Image (cartoon, rainbow, N blue to C red; front, side):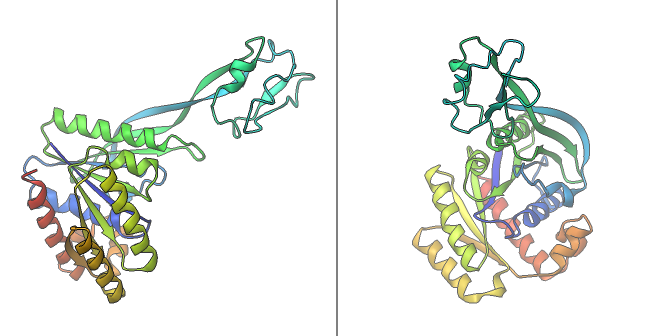
Length: 301
């Protein structure tokens, strides 16, 4: 079982559109045995918007813990106040001479727990979202929803990927395609960990080229083999040349270019991959060639 992760250093490069098209193409042109999909962008999961999944399983995600004061045990001594670096310990607005912890400000460090002389403070595990197993026309999709303001996105990404991998192994599915989150922070690291191949979707803009270099360095650090595809390639030819020069300098193969095509967002609005809705468009032809090249690369790994 192989894992292909699709990443970009920034949002808006077309990563999810290409991932959805890959799912469609894999279902009609191989891979033998099908694919499993994982949407690793748990803060703003949108692969489901294109694949129209039907939820088959919903599971609560319980992540970090927050401090909570038992007002019946608290003596209002204030020993917890100076040790809280997040200013989360406040006077209880409903009880005189009692302390209260603001759950929004609390970082879950537990320093107050150790400082409390009466053991009035305890850490309470929090539900931080859900993860889902869904059925699509192209394969099983694992995706998740992290509640707003929660900070365990890396842990939830790992959970989504783990369940996708276990499902693929159990059902003898040879390929897991992971739609990674944008950027280079913790969720991205979780998404690319253990991947057999990383496909970087680069955009020929100043921001796109800058963030391409960041995601390439991140994947190199974690020793993930990488290749590049250039999306919206015809909007800035000089940027395409810069990307190719960067790739040559770092011995990274550029697999192809996908032109800017208004049919891609149009197909997404219709809830279908562009390769299914508009199979003869220029972008669909380019993405089909890109998929065939990626499939050839990952097959012998």
